[in-house]
Length: 432
Image (cartoon, rainbow, N blue to C red; front, top):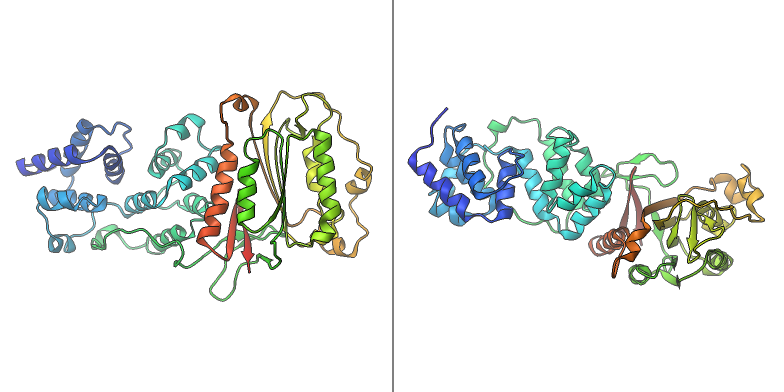
């Protein structure tokens, strides 16, 4: 084990003093340290320990500065030029470099979406402490969910937030992972952000009917829904708490949907509004249907603005627009987004609908629904949180924020495709 010389100690001291807190966090990760204390003093000790493990310690420090984009330190402190680095074998693990680059590519909206997707895997306390994608990767490494050989979880997250450009970067790494680290020369191409529009669009999805995984090849395109009507579809938004309905309205109007926004409805009024939409579907003849509901409720019932009463079954919402009740929607995507604010479970009497007996049967009379199951072509997204959040001043749903961010980004990045996150993969829609 080599002892750092005076030049290396001076370089470590100047590097640690010059880096920002964000740069120190990235450097700790590049050096394979999961230490949560990223102070200047800890960085000096960590780098001092790391240089003893490398024969060309000054070149190791130089590569770290290159990875951080600190060319000023590379020249003035490390005193290494481009030719010296070009002849150097890569010493920083490629997996660490890749994760650092991905973290730099992801913006705040991307990070919020990823944190939402991981809310069932990481505790709320840990998610609140994460300031970057690298912080999340560190937590996932501790759970053994992510490693150089285990990247499917990261790939799923990137697909679900619509960052197909970064999925391609991940795929390139996986395809070249067989070559030994020590046989790779250091790439001197300065890291840069990838264009969201010009990159190849490789989309892995879930077949909307069969649920089978789709991985498109160069010869074939993935199964997708095509939007040819104008407007593309009809969206009904029922906001019974009055916080985020207008945000959803703006988003779906930007996606060229016709939108009906209803606010502060009782449970009976909600049901009447949905039945009125159902009656108008034949006249609308759109290529899709979207239903967004924001309401207080229990696990199975929504109350609208009612404080007590029967409420209405969440499942009734979906059944109202199945292929049996609305044949014109057979084979077309039906998307439901439910934000429920949880209240203590009540002894609610289920709503009795005259058509319930018919809806419960396995068979159906229509020729269209004989070929397509009644619950086919449905994307169902249901999020719930505690009712006490409504007491917060200017409260806004994290779920709705993540949803609208994902939809707006997908529309801006891919003019012909919209990919919606789903726990089994992605729900792909084509705009033509």
